[in-house]
Picture: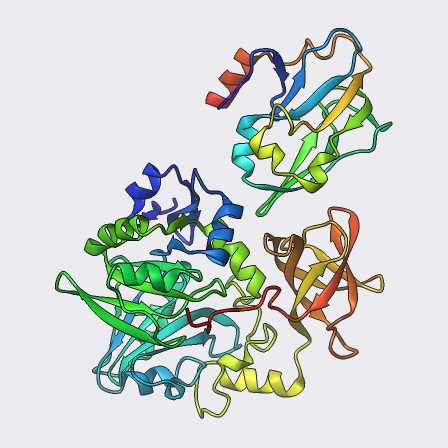
Length: 128
Length: 367
């Protein structure tokens, strides 16, 4: 499983780009998450401008067999979403840390991102 | 305590291929393979050829003078519609209520010998019911763990089997027997995918060799994930979801697998009464109009009122839309062509009621 060092993570298998302060951060699901989901066929994400709360549902990812909820890793405003996933949801499987990103969120709390798991802590969690 | 999961004789090969394994009917079976995935494996079967290890399927031999006549008094379909060398889809129903204990394939070898292939989880029950009813001289032998079953499915399946010198080209629902290392291999024109295909019933000791030869012939290993999307595209009902002890064959619209003219079969009285009265609900296909996937258990609404429940559902890799099967109440006549709504986790998604298959069946194609 790939777990890039320069990202932050949640226990729900999402990654967050590590930006400074209240700059928008990019959010996606981890390699571990995409592998356990299997082939993704539908992605449902909020419109830009939506306010989200950390730990609450941000959207859904569906594979042929199951549905998984995506939780907001931090509170803030959705400023962009990856509309390429409408036509090519398989990007979530092929490039979860790159072209398969989900949304960008402007965090309301400048310290929220650095409070998330670092790569080592997330690796421990997936190896349990 | 739960019993340990049973394993196919091909288990080590699945592990070596990086398969994701999952419990299914008491067996640990491959869901998908590392270099595949449901979509790739599904496409291989629709466009080329794939092999499924379905060794979890039951194998029960019913043997003795009058074996066919005995089974004809138990199972729903009329075994006299087929002759030796042909297979038949049939049901084992509950004598009192007519619910479906299991759906199975019966291979008619001879008047005195029939091989039954029930679902993994129901094999013990089917064998027990038959054994309890069998007259003296008829043996019901459960051979669940003696044979592997390999389903070779797809437009290139005949060419793949020919490369192994196995018989091909016989009619849909008929079988041929080949000899391999002194043992018999049954090659049947059956499957659960809607494509031209074969199911091989192979003694355990030969399973590995045949699997390896199929791989050499370029056949892609496919898991139960793709098997489910393929069968859902055909609208083939799955026992435990679309028919069950509480969903009758009349409701599941499986009347074609019932020999209504037979004087006797388990559940006959209940099913004839239900057929005459008209079932309260029947099984239909759902095709999503909105971007949504129906899933088992979801509520179906017609004009705002509850009208039934989704029993199977997935994303159709071929059609690229959500599809499913649902048990619908339709007091005003056939619901075909009407639009309903499905409660998808609180959202209302529009879906059209259709008659499956969702993708044309090619089981009878000659290749």
